[in-house]
Length: 354
Image: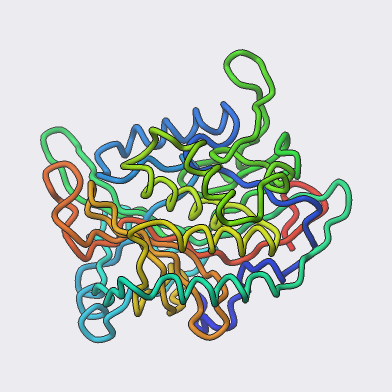
């Protein structure tokens, strides 16, 4: 882990090189190509017990866990998510460890529109990066997840190690590469490919390309209408699915400042969106959060922002109501998923790191 989270290179749109049309990304709910979906569905089959979560983009990683003593001490002493030593290149392996827990921040049911207005203004004022023809969108994140594991007749809650996930995507979404410990080999896998019918996949909200995102409306009402229409029937209710879809775009894409601001303003119009006074991302950075509780699963998805600059830091999902997972093993206070954005940049080729 970076001992000084404030000096971590955060993934912000003011970061490196720019967006010609808008970034693609990998995933939420249907995103991307057949090959990607097939790979991730296999991964998720192995973790199927992992829980009462709203169906999410197969490429999004989930949560992180610590040794019980560390977790308990951290939660009691600091009241936030605490990570033990390790870093992106040499994560501490907790694949069989107890789950990461956190204290639950206080919720303000009325504060979301005001906070999202400030966040959207900050996003709209960011400098739009400029990409050269032929470049790729590079996104680097820290991620981990908690899941239910069953071996024979024994079922337990375990964690996967905190790890670095690196993806490269061409603006049209047709070329790409993914390297993610535990889910790909050291060299990674291609994100190219056709669907089962042999057709080139058509970008959509669940599997957007950078160029596709450039076609989305930047009027918040029109944008939210499109999200509701395109995700109808998905997830645990239309409002929760709309919130999930926007969150997936924020984490796994690199939208222009205009679209990013519109996404925040659209989110402010979704019923049930609240603010949380404290949250910590996978990199240990503390901030405030905009969140929504999935009443079906009892899990609250939190978008974490720097409390001074309103930079988007990452996302986590926390069990806050009832017990989740097979056998109710996921208890309130369990961090089911955590994902911190570290770098977003334009690079000249696949496997090139800024």
